[in-house]
Amino acid sequence: MDPSTPQRDLRTPIPGRVTPRVAASTEHQATVAAHLTKRDRWIARLCAEHRTLTSTQIARIAFPSRRAANHRLQRLHQWRILDRFQPYIGRGRAPMFYVLDTTGAHLLAHEDGIDPRELHFRAERSIGIAYSLRLAHLHGLNSLFTGLIADALAHDDRNVTAWWSEARCARHFGDLVRPDGYGRWREADRQIEFFLEWDTGSYHLSRFVAKIPGYLELATTTRIVTPLLAVFATAQRESHARPLLAEHLRAQPRPQDLPIATTTVDDLNRAATGSAEIWLPLAHRDAGRARLIDLHTAWPHLGEPIASAQTTTNTSEASPVPRLSPPAPMPPFAQHDLTWKPSR
Image (cartoon, rainbow, N blue to C red; front, side, top):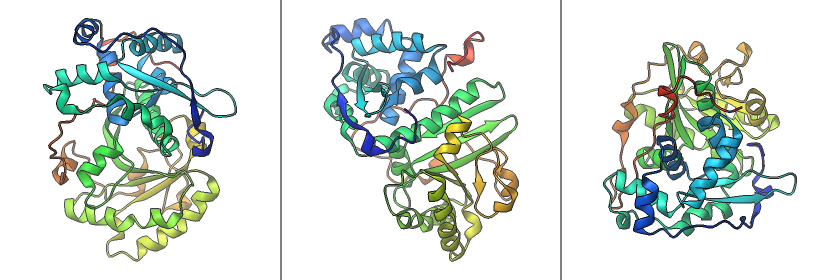
């Protein structure tokens, strides 16, 4: 199953295989906590923050082989750290999709000093993403970031230094604009930050174009020029969107405050990573597609990203409901294990 799978093909999940599962009791949580590794906890936080990850995505960024991933994920499922479902796609067999489960939510809450009751976690709401009309959108979005993480793990001089979910972006920037994601990518001594919009082809392009004033207002408010990367469902969709975006951008008072580059799901699938030479800057089409880090060449006015700069625009983070701390974008265990290599 690739990120281009349309929502209409993600039908009712196949009933899960029958496996013995223990109750999410206090005694069980205490027992399980002693057996969880840093990797287990990181995976659980990823599922909490980004709602769902497939076994394929998790294997790429957290395990040396698919077999090792399946074995450990089976254990985490039995312990109720994670729950899972498998969409029926009609052709072939979809991977398992994993979400946070009750024991995992309670243990992460205790780690963060939160009373699990105050977290208001509901397992049925977590697994409910299986029936969401946004599942395909979320799968594609998370595929791009997990692809970047896998690329970084395979190269010593690369790193994903930020990966924000749509929900986290909404809490920070929602008064002005709601990006699908926010990220920062580093190669050697260069770094680029970006907002991400993932197009599934299921809505009119005018809806996408209408977001431009919000992004420009955010740039004016923060005085930070942050590029916008747009991934379109098809090459035809990309070719239709680019002139619309360019025309609308030219009508704005400071169009240079919103650099835009586009690509397609097919280009992303072929490259297997968003860091590759797949991005076509809106204002420099004749220069051809560029690698992610080389977009600085098309936009020389970009400043160096500051790790904490975007958090200064937090307008709605305060909430009466405690939230779990987001995970680090890179796996913590890989930095200390020189023999570990990601699966392919």
